[in-house]
Length: 316
Ligand SMILES: Nc1nc2c(ncn2[C@@H]2O[C@H](COP(=O)(O)OP(=O)(O)OP(=O)(O)O)[C@@H](O)[C@H]2O)c(=O)[nH]1
Image (tube, rainbow, N blue to C red; front, side, top):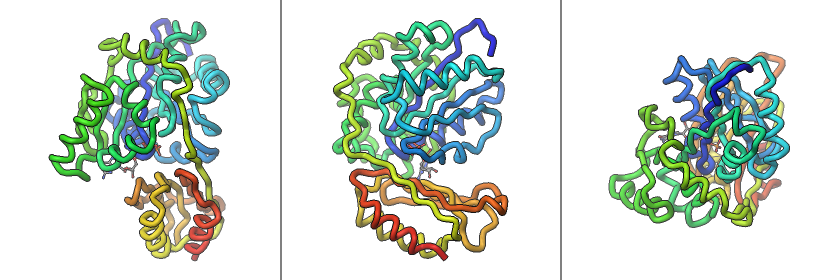
């Protein structure tokens, strides 16, 4: 990679399932002239998000084994070095952090690490918030408030799932954590792109101040991620019934996403859940020797054996 002007870096933060990957797809789609490199950070070992980026025209680099803000010096540095020494040419780096990462720890690399300060330039931190679940997450998970506080702008996504009154209340709640922040209500993370760039130019000092908050405020609590896999085809009707029941009975399951090899479908089926809501969509066609199910479940104190038993019970 050869360039004299610093490469812009945008950090996407926001709790699990808020719409970060949806925004990545939007940004790539809306800016065909920009060459993006994307660092995807998965919590847990399984790389699913890479498959969920449907837009082409971007280099995707996976940081799959661990949380980006906990292993800063090792993993992020390694991947950045790979990027700048590779032949891949790009002019904007998007970093999709895990839903439980502290974005300021990531931002600090670009602001204070002399290795990268001249090569990269932090353009801004965008927080995605899920309008339906945000208030609950703000109560339960301190990291949600940290993410909002770190951001230059909050995209209050999924407004289709709440009323106008709810929206007003949620905006006030966000302002209570981070006064004066710009909040943009949206659906499918669709926002005028101009609003999303050169954010740091608008308020550098706030981030710099916040990044000096000691790392002791960073916690992942009891959040964990488990991965279920099977080579047998899954029965989507059984899975639907199991999910409806399980997500209601186990509110500690925050997020579930996976790629399924389903009975009667030639294409991959993508499953996503956020809170009690789940969606199936179709992905690309399976290559026949590679069919397999892989589901990542993220939550608080998960009962792995019960969840795996349930998923095994959905096999055809
Ligand atoms: N109802 C509704 N669903 C949405 C909206 N935006 C995104 N979604 C769905 O929400 C789910 C999660 O979106 P993602 O973009 O994968 O969220 P994420 O923040 O990348 O998730 P993690 O990587 O797990 O943290 C997907 O099923 C999206 O299709 C919206 O405005 N309304």
